[in-house]
Length: 108
Image (cartoon, rainbow, N blue to C red; front, side, top):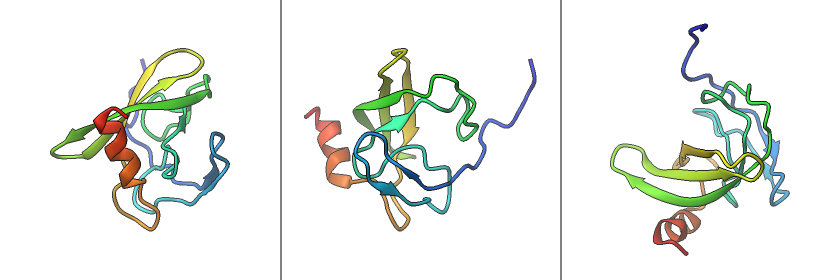
């Protein structure tokens, strides 16, 4: 098994395949989900590597508050059913929708 970096910065902008909005780069880390609807794509094996062949939409199921990370978004892949966790983007020019994060935490 080849050892590699556990995190690769990959912060390009993209068009969200779920809501259609233009998503700008985050500026300080890899952006891997839409800040407007919180949907993502199943494209990473390790954060930022973009090497997962699945490529399907990841539905945001819930958020979990984390004392060190703020919110962690839990996604489920619409194709393969994998569960993926990622840190919410709480700062930058386009942070994640705080109201949506709270609603997902409350289970709405």
